[in-house]
Length: 431
Image (cartoon, rainbow, N blue to C red):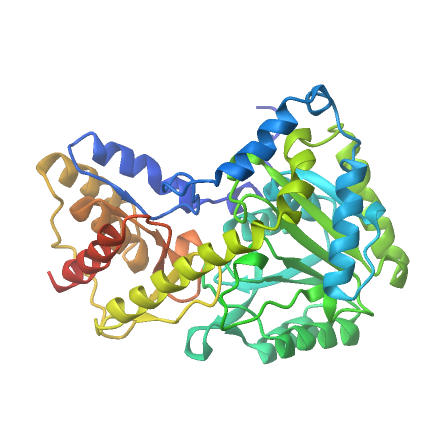
């Protein structure tokens, strides 16, 4: 091309969570039975959406209005409902005009980083969720900026690390937190959220909280929305239906803007995101129309509790089983439906591990030939997949993690199969 058409930040766009699937599909063609633990899709893992929720959606489908455009920001009645319930829930007033719907939270995340001034950066957690870290890195045309979540302190953020990076990097304009976190499952205590707010106040920053898993926080760790403690700091809260209902195919996420009046620059930035949304006309109407009826139904909270209890039980079993192996370290998750497993000093990478069959061995040899020896967790995940069919995601390349390990889900519906998967992982390490 006579003009370089590649975006300077294109090299930062990586999504190993789905990237490993191509390798898994090729292995399946050799006769290997797959156990997919890479993607957080409850429906794909066999979770049944309750009939009453499907009936609400069906009722909306039967209305001609749901086949038309919605207003650019979203349906008025739905935004009014969220403004009322979220204001009561956080104690911080949320105006319906400060809510914008998007085609999934991924769309919203992209807009948040794309329309930020190119010289302004967002400091986010490490391990990092790749949608955030990749798009932020592409936006900044460099590696993403991160603070450490500490596996030796229940995956809580290192606040000294955050403060120092903010102090010595004047380009940082915002702090991102994912609460409950993906991939670690940590739920931030209120006191930690208050520390984020204090740093934002001291250095004149705004805050972003991805709270897509807000209603999947387990009973022993109450969830606190950042909006409830950030009364003097501009905040963007990210929410959605995909993980909660669950309805990942709805592609329905939204942004909530709090404390718009505090800073004129933040207000103008929020307006630019709204203007960008106008170029797409609107987001999908059907899930917006169904949202108030689903979330306000008296059966919804028992539905969520049943799911939370199931995931918590799964998490406890996984921690108990995997922590028996000296090469693994697992911190008890407090929310969402993921488990992050890190390697201890007892972990020894081996190239002699064999795949399940000769055809799979050829595929494995090819992938390992192109994978640096330093990427010990990525090599491990591909070896595990080729030998057992268990598909997990490496923390380093999948979540830009500074500590090696892997993430798996807690979504398996078959109790016996879940238990067997855990045992197969430890047996693989023993082999």
